Image (cartoon, rainbow, N blue to C red; front, side, top):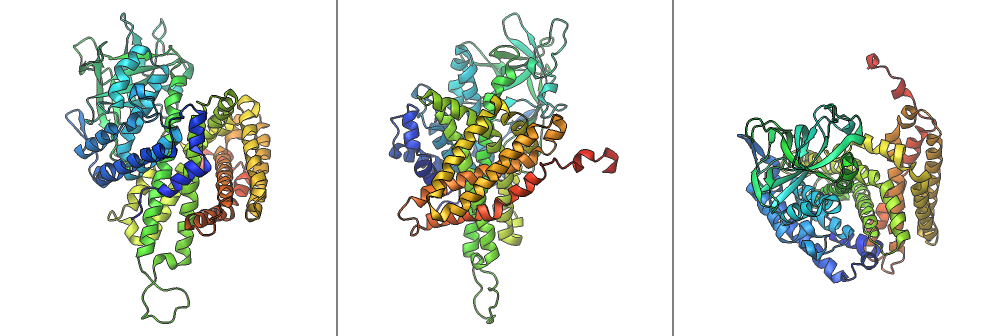
Length: 604
């Protein structure tokens, strides 16, 4: 039976037929990899997902981590799954052999992670955070920090987190108040509170390596204002000596657990730094080491945050995909009702998939989740291009990646949830019960439009910064790519209509961007930024759908292969049902629709 996690056939098409990952690996100096070695890596991910993550997914949802006597206890099944993941070398998959890695292309690693996420998203969250933590320390940590922290994390012995938000600040990092006081030995003592810390405490590893944003006070004891004064610190749950050995408990305390709607298998904590509970009297403050220079913390943390944002996009795409595959299986097997016009009520009920409206909902899911997978893997391919031997490719791919990162995070997050909603609808009343998995997929996916920067924050980032950066160079680069796709589509009569739709949508988007940039007042310019993000994301995914359709049109078996036929049908659906939304969103931007701006507090 085909996997109900993610379509392996779709993953292989996107990697090998569309992105040509083998050629990309050669350009990035990963010439040892072939189709066979990359397939073998995907086999490992799929096997670990099916054997270790899927069996404990519902248990981890129904029995989330518990806080008892100041310590968080998770399910032992999660520990076993994560250790199997580590033992397979998957925590270091993209890294070179020096770190125990396979030097996988990033887009292959993300594709492999899709299986693991779909099998157990909340358990995979611990691995995601640990990998991103290790990658940041590899990029910016001192040699001593790399030596002491990275290997234990990549072997699964220790795990990692990122500690940004605070109870009073939320997503406004300029307002954080955690203090880092310099000590005579070069270390710092941190005091403050961090909120919404995923994997902030648990018993799944021997140590937890926190990466913490904090501010160093000036000579008067005053914390610097704004984000420019933020520094980054590595603060382990247990102190680590110069040889990398675990020492005494650090002054990091779990103040409480957040009880979530979904993603329940990942502990989510309020952490207190500097309570003094774990240190001798008079020495309160969690011991930490600075990463990089003082005042550069937010810039360094964006390395982890941007990786996390692409990761969130993949989580959303994977959860949407497994919801679609579960709905498809249910629709093929569940018999209910008869088709309109049927006269013989004694005739057997038809399968759900024979009803036109069910096929519509399935096709909508397919168009959304396969578009989301393409978007995330395209961005992962841009990460691979940053290792290209060609400097021009590196520069251009870097600009495109910066531009598309907020889209890669937010578009799958928003539309993946909608796909999961449709999966519940296809199941009917059964989908609303815990007897079927689709309700958990929806609950798990609902977090993704919120964490690692809400949809609104990503919209402001895109319109307020990304399309403006470099005097619009990245947007111009994207325009070059879109026009190249339009030229190719024009060579295929079956795609001519769709190409014209994309061309019109792109031109309207460019005009809207120019009009919005001319608005001086930033409040007005960004008031409807979410409409801009929606339009931008839909156009980008339409562009990727047209690209993949063009690849299929070159295949001689496109009419005989059900996979290709289904892919082209999903592309047509996307253009005829989804792309018309772009007109509505852009109409709210030219001019900016002001009703929300003019609404007074008391009028609500």
